[in-house]
Image (cartoon, rainbow, N blue to C red):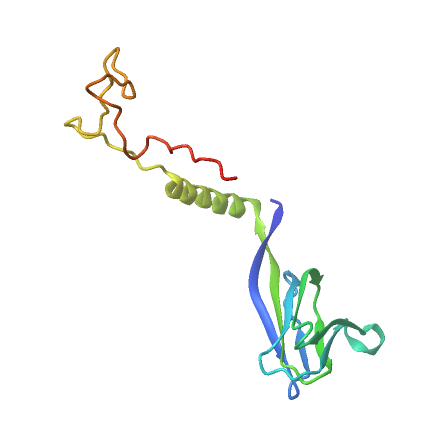
Length: 183
């Protein structure tokens, strides 16, 4: 029996400010692979007119830890930054190196959960059944008294034809009158 990994995703976020300069994302779970997919960093509405520099510290310990600035935010010129596509493996720490914030970090925590092939097949079958139920079309029932049927015109009958006694009818759905060209 082989094992397959299925991603489970949850929202993760933090606030960096004068009283909370650092926030870490780490996990003690060794049974699953974890990833932090960054989405955005933005200043709060109370941010001062100053530069706010956020750095990312990856790894643990003094030897392997590496700090890299990833965002410089300013209330008037750059209040938010899109970081989609930046996927990190824990442990990672966000530090407000300069400024007083508040800076909000928004990310997605993805954990890969292991499933056996049998469990995954059963779950996929259940999802397909749910989709079939949701996507089944509604049957339309025709009225029994014939009220919904259109009457076919008889041969030789033309609605737009004009004879002297019956001019063509005017009304909705008969097209627009041509407009005179403006010079």
